[in-house]
Length: 336
Image 1 (cartoon, one colour):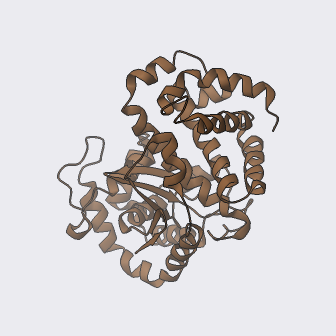
Image 2: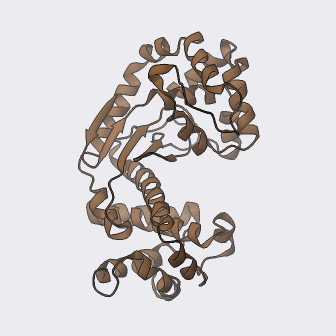
């Protein structure tokens, strides 16, 4: 299933869905609940019940996945790998990376057939079709290329959004596969034990914008920095004016800048392409939930960059060395 919408292609990929089905039968859902109480989508909960009730948690594909999770293999790596499998050839791949359990792709296809996953999906196809339609509506007029190119330069990567009704149910996954940037995103979570909201819930549109812009911005910026390692190294000699908690979460200068950039970019996009009220609501939530008190100052500095790019600065790399100093000033004078 695939729907082209403006700058973004909304797509349901069965390789991602199959990995998510296997994930439902591991201890991932329980550990996610331990981190933060939430109610996954009804389809996720019914899938987990189906897998456990039928004993598929003991299937080699699930056991292999659990082993990799126990080894702290990142979900991003697992979802990237899944997209390299050839669906038309029973998940064939030239060679598995050394961190993958033996014959995992073959076992995953066996799970697909043994558990009759295609039939299971067909029986609940309406929820996937609805999620695809909702996401397509949300992204009908997005202008991400226009918005991001002044920062990362012109880019030709394809932006793909996959609504995820399975697992992980409480976090977004962003991956690069060839020239595709894929944002794998669950629906907006409600509080506590309430079910998630639809993707196109009018009061929560910033959920999908935040998720997608954060992942695309992060992936594009990492690629941009990879092209300019010397300039990045020079810029990183000047410390960021961020607190110890932020430094603990984002240890390197590059990680700190990317985290600041993606948060600011969401606020700026909401203000420029939606309305100021949405932007203010987002900034307030970022400060309250994530402690991003530095976000208003970051937005101010990024706005200044946009005003001067093409004149004082040719590109973001030229701006990087003075970013910490400007942020330090903005942090003092900008009030949330």
